[in-house]
Length: 382
Image (cartoon, rainbow, N blue to C red; front, side, top):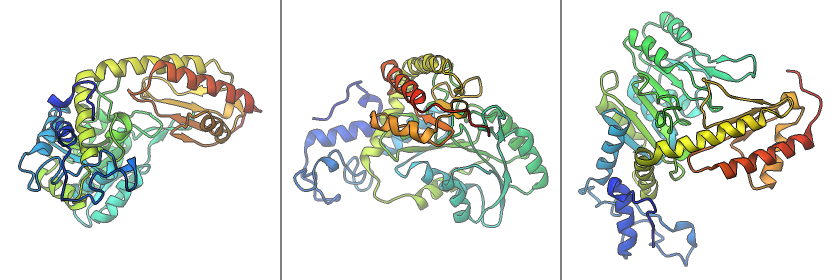
């Protein structure tokens, strides 16, 4: 039988609906076509329940999705939330459609994810590029600077929005409050692709989430920073500079008409968990990451990303000083059953979430130390 180990269903209507469906063990005459039989293609379809005629009626008369989205909007302190089963890709493209019309200009971070860049194409928007600054110590982006956005808006006074990504893929955090001030001084919305920051703002040692810092809208992936099923994401916005009806229409225009109920239920459950236990879970994992950072920083030549401008839950290693090739280190980690989020010659990125613990991070640190010792060479000069 399906489980709810932390008793979240009373605060998560979609999770409750998913559990009820499993507990009733129905014989559905609806899609999906596997009809919940596991003897056809196996366990890969276990737990797959549709939203329509599954978690709710075909007419959505029970309102469980609307209820769950309203709870998430309250949790992030805004008046609009939409769940997505298409990841932050879907959310980014919906926001591109919501903020402008074909031919209008928008100020855009040059390193934004391709989903937002494709959103510009879909919406017919013209980008005015602004580049994140780079820290010379490690060569990684530190975020778009408010002064650079101000200069871009001065050169494009007809721009209708500012679109940035924060936190970055490598966990660096920019001055979102400063960016919001600049955008609002020009009376345009600040839209933040926070795909990698669903957990931000839920512990006092973490940076605030973008909406708390003044942004008008954000997209975030519940399947990245939170314990939700792959493709789970949220679109969150406050009305004012964002037209709620236009955003709602944009979400519907770009969404599947057959949303997976398990993805939606996991998003709802992750939100409930974040509100109830997030601070405790995130505090523990941040402390474990701090300990591992301190341990690895003693490795000769290794630069461990740290400091106030870095997400305290992310583990990012810059390798040139060790002479080790990150791709070879990654191969060792994969062989040890510890794949990392990203690796290239010079950089390793380990994605750490509230599902991790100190024991697992200590094992990762030991494997990294052994691999770096194995592949150590002459420092690489950039």
